[in-house]
Image 1 (cartoon, rainbow, N blue to C red):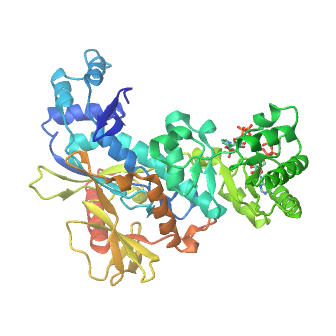
Image 2 (image 1 turned 45 degrees about the horizontal axis):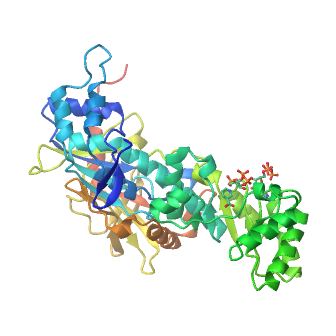
Length: 499
Ligand SMILES: Nc1ncnc2c1ncn2[C@@H]1O[C@H](COP(=O)(O)OP(=O)(O)OP(=O)(O)O)[C@@H](O)[C@H]1O
Ligand SMILES: O=P(O)(O)OC[C@H]1O[C@H](OP(=O)(O)OP(=O)(O)O)[C@H](O)[C@@H]1O
Ligand SMILES: O=C(O)c1cccnc1
């Protein structure tokens, strides 16, 4: 990424062309030298396992991907940097004519992606890129970087919000994976269901709600806690949440009650108290009793401290009544699984845009690592009441079996017939002729959050549970399954056996 902001269609974007692995650029030069730069390719991004041992994921990253595509250009500065690189064996790494080609290159790729906030599952394409192979390849690394991370954090947020059943504020900036990581994590947290973030720059950049309480330092900056609470209530009478655990939680609750009653006398309201240490369930129950006894029944309880979906679930099961939750580190860093592991695989090629596609398959020692051949999309079938019934991965250029038969990608015996049910297709236009076509409403994190909530409402409880969730049916369209099996068999037959 260069430091220079670019403006295109009124949006501020960064130049992302160098946000790639070196091998993409050396391969690009190879394609160019071998006359293959304009050969057409189709790549798909998909992941193989749901994160966090869960039963679903929440797609996120399309908005940044659109921004990357709009900001994709090699500046003179970028070209000068590439020209300065030496090949390990001596001489310049890049040919100067190739660098001229890159300088004047404009993207022409076509990109389709699942809308942000869509519930997605393993082995289904969530992004499809078609166009000149050189360009498809140059986009790979940045695309994976943005989709993998944001989908991971949005999924974590969705799990936390499912457990919370009350608003969750994302508090992760201070312990997130760097400044850039924090910004996109805060946005992904909102896509996944969080009500707000404490990250003010993310709020400004992405038009997402910001919220906050106060720190222990506020209390420590005064001679005593009661004085600190009174001062805070005076400064923020309409949004007063007092942190009660700086010295002693029970005394902190008493002091908050004193201030809450004083606020009531003035016609104001103490919105809540925050507890950030100790046995949160016990303290929340204790605080609720004390607040109710004092008549402050409308003062809510906010809990924070190293929370994730599991502790939140447990604390709720222990009877805590919570107004909202503050969740930081474990959400913003996707603490228990640092990467989604999504991949971007070549699935079809053709010499030019006028030719028919020829499917490509990568075989490996593990059949679970077989890729998906063809130019693909996903059909999501629903029952009449809107509940998700199953997803079919299909080739857009082939006929689909009337019965809507899907077969588990790695198990011929696991199949299902979905014919007759309503369906929609999941991949939506993100870029045409190298320019993003994502409408403004598709870039909105809060609109994506509504999609997440709606999508999860239609997913079966058994597929949302944290412990050993039931797996949602995703299968290859029957014809695609058999074509893939035949391709794998012939590629395997042609291999030299290992000695
Ligand atoms: N009732 C509870 N049930 C399950 N987990 C809880 C409960 N209360 C707190 N926790 C969790 O237990 C952990 C307690 O961690 P820790 O010992 O660091 O907290 P602490 O006593 O407040 O100390 P510190 O001041 O260092 O944060 C946190 O992850 C917290 O979310
Ligand atoms: O625990 P997390 O889920 O990451 O949530 C964020 C944490 O950050 C703050 O603590 P910190 O000790 O940094 O500052 P403070 O003095 O304001 O509490 C806050 O009080 C939370 O405990
Ligand atoms: O506003 C808060 O309460 C907050 C913000 C960041 C981290 N911890 C707490």
